[in-house]
Image (cartoon, rainbow, N blue to C red; front, side):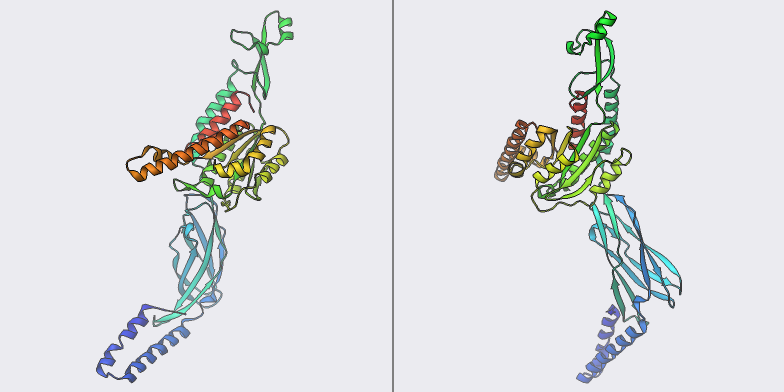
Length: 429
């Protein structure tokens, strides 16, 4: 049951008879009349649950894009007139949730609500509320019911704008025939005549003896290398930088690297977790890789737990027993790294090439510069101490053979992609 503003107006109208006959019986008689009219209006309004509701599956969208959710309203009885509210989580960005219903007997009507998610992940429908107003407009019947539904907001992948330029550099790398390099992790390409400046270690003495001129081997970076992305979903990834969670910024960097590496012919796997493994993408084909990564990342949320890096390192070993590139997408937080990451990463660095990609906060740089008053001076001192601790932690990781990339959310994807291209060009994968 619900009441409208008309009931309040009706009660206030009782001031007229009370002024004409100022007695207690007049007041009670008028209130009784209001109650009676309300009860009659509720009884005549009809059942609000006479409809059958079902929801059409809502398509996935990238964060920042809109979609439409549709309820199918079927009326198995007499003509139905009323109102409906399709409620969603606030972060689903539902607009136009209130609808007027006029459904003839035996017919089905679609009712659509616009959604514009403001957060990544699964945004859920709350309740559908049906109302039928009585003929007097004083009161009516109401019922809320759960009609399951959700919209999945995928990571926006803002860094995809950098993909064409990095692919062009990759094509230049693959197309260099005169400057093929010799080194670990490279494949033989062809033979050519020796020129000044060539590495003497690349001379092919057998071919030289056959041709009676000095011949060198040319090399090209190997394909089908293995890249394992380890996405940290622990408490440190929940911090926000420029109002974006560190986890989302790390996802953006992982997607750009995965897109680039798959085009280069390398295999890419994903492990996401903290104290347990939440998502894994292993063995995806190159055509389906990005789709599977985005779908796997979409529902991930930071957990207020410390990461179990021994568990994550063991999972990396299970996924790949051969040497590959392991990218740890985790914040460079000194306390968390020094307490739980250093020992496992030392083992990983002995088997793989390990890169730690961290989202830094550009606010630290601004705090270091601004010293306009006493408060800013204290802020600058705190920022300087934080930067020094991060540099100390990065140096400790470097001594273990881990390369640390620390950049703000906008530049981290580019820095990571460029580092990958550098490793490819030097034959270090």
